[in-house]
Image (cartoon, rainbow, N blue to C red; front, side, top):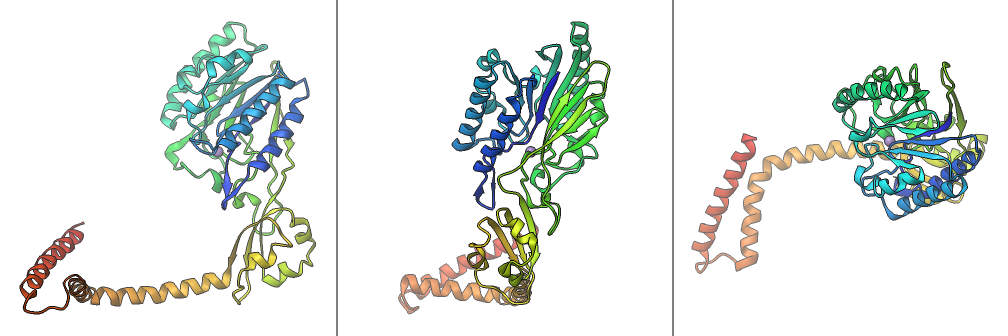
Length: 388
Ligand SMILES: [Mn+2]
């Protein structure tokens, strides 16, 4: 049994308003090239196919054409998919009862997790994303189902799941639901031959028999591996299972269309482009931190011809000015609060004058009555605010 494990495609993702759809198409094209090798029996996608519950048309088209091409080129390959926390199970599961006849298995309901998909002599159990509490319940059912599958002739059992394994290393791009209550002890599934995990975006081993493939693209700058560091490496996992042997897991490095880097230096450093690192980075997605003392006006425009894929720039000088402005602002706010009550009365008087003209004997009584009502309401609001 040989299959490919990936997860966290997040099709349709944007970073700083930049769509990554071309980058994602490049990644999926690379995956098609790998899977053209007929020795692969299956492709397993462990959740977060899409970046959002209601994916955009470009994301849906991309995934649809990927599956279509794959099945045209490799009609015999099994495809196993579960929803992650970013996916809508109902949308991802569209047509699943029809597609299963074609060897495309979308398991989107936890009720079906204990019914394995047989690929040759291996039973694949697929556990869609559910809250951590429900994973613990499902673990018991799955263990019984695993034993039953072996009794029924399966040689080995694989589990696909989307969860936050205890002790895993997270990164910015998956911190959407987090908190220790969401963590799951991967040892619950220790008796499976291989556990194919999704959710954490860094490739990592999560237990004796469990691996995260990680996202095939870096989806946040913190995955870039630190300021001025080499970009993070991303992988698909080739998994080979043989009887009575631990799984053989081979990471296949992915070459992205654009790497992602976080670079720091003053404006002249980037503008003069003397450093070899900068020439290497010119085609990358960049997060620049400009460290100089002076504020540069529109640095993105000035640098765009050298680095066409700058996604964001921060300036130390601007941050310092901002902090200064915030400090001044908070002094102004304090003064304003003290004057506030008087100001509101003045504002309301001006408002009445706008409506009815200057206060005179014709409208004097109406002004007084409206002002009295207004003050009453204002005091009620203040009392309610104080009570909260
Ligand atoms: Mn994810």
